[in-house]
Image (cartoon, rainbow over all chains, first blue to last red):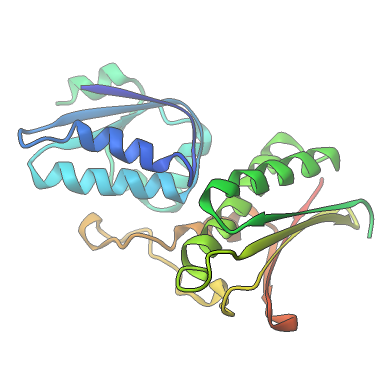
Length: 99
Length: 139
């Protein structure tokens, strides 16, 4: 399953991202890809939702993998050490094929 | 002090974008480049969000946040002032980026982004109010 996020993920909108991810994390194993190519702004609120979603999906044996983060998103992820927590791919195709 | 501007917002999450938009407009008007404007916006969001989520968490819900912007000696200065209980966010321990997934707590990164994105940050409790000052060079 590939989910595509766009625009600005800030303290106002982060909960929507978390909700969207949660809806796709069910009792069965979830292999999710989140395409971040269209996200030009992500604050710590957005990162918090990504981490919470990753914990949820890993608890049921799945994974959340990321693709195409923009430079700005990659920068904050690296600052928080999330580039070593998430598997990150150059394209969504690569991310899907990694499963 | 050169040009300046200020805004007061209710301390509510749905108002934080007003503060971000205001700072972005003033920073751009003062000649900040796009990357600098982005960094100022994100920093203001993190500080205001902290105030709403933690500063006013257990007190009256009608609190306000003042945001002042001005330039001085080619430096863009943002000062965020609130009347929540006095608290210095710069005194919090710095989170460790090497923390494994399952040991990660919810927060702590916002203030780190502010430290990194701004050239200088400073907290004071003058007049028994929280003052968080951020500086970023215009060039």
